[in-house]
Length: 406
Ligand code: TRP
Ligand code: SF4
Image (cartoon, rainbow, N blue to C red; front, top):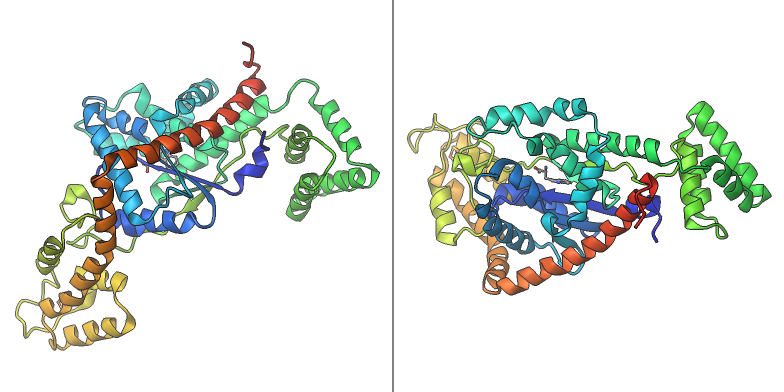
């Protein structure tokens, strides 16, 4: 069995609701970040298909195709199924059990206070979101995170509040259930097993942390426990928990890893979004890329070719800032402000950059589109791996709550 505090630091978990095929905004925001993280951490990335149900319960049939399309785009972006666990939330029913158990100890006020709750209800007025499931959205997300004991959760700014709530839920859970009967005696016995010298050091560090809030002492104490050779994992968990004053840490608190906002706006300069019809999809054909960029709006003051323009007022310039090197940027600035170049000249290098960027992705996507069984087997394998990890946590959760009877 793995020790909760030990796995968590290295583990990253994130999910996306299945929205169908993705666009360059997703690629430059979330996916490039995931691709980078997969080299640095043990990553679990999943399709939050149950979360899609909170807003699409009236026609859940649209979800399936969106799931496969989205996974194909993840793979096309360079997510490596060999090193990442890719899975679908609904195929790991353990999320639902943890969600249910957590729901018993979650104050209603915590859910009602999450800012996305009212915001989303207002934004999606055409839908009836006065449902139990929708209120529970962030708690299901907490279960998603906690069931893997993930240390880091890459999310956009809009999701920070959900990770914050997850931390509170974990704290509450550990506080309520982290102290098994006889916890203090177990701790004393475990301390004794460390040997005189280490036991003394442990107590000293504990005191510095608890009385003076000395964070270095906290870290050193955890390291000391981690390095012990002759005590069991369970005892180690108790000793880790005792330091924090919480008992045994069953569900470690995750950290949000804020995904840098994508600098990539939509074709019209607003945020790139399907609902604004201003996207270039990750599978956009080269001719279509050409057409869409050629017809992008430019500085509205630049009516004639001979009028100088101002890049700061032009969405094309924002795209150059994503795609172009210093030299090209200089050429645009100079050419635009002196009317030395036309807007079509200005767009040309962009069209090429986007086409070049998309080419390998479209190719990879095509391989998966032509072989749907391959996509399914990648996800099936991920589901299994995820389930293994989820089951371990759930077992400890049931045990901590006294529900492990059979
Ligand atoms: N709510 C997230 C979003 O809309 C998706 C999500 C569900 C998620 N569960 C998660 C993200 C767990 C991170 C971790 O983007
Ligand atoms: Fe925009 Fe380029 Fe035209 Fe200037 S030259 S207005 S930056 S498209």
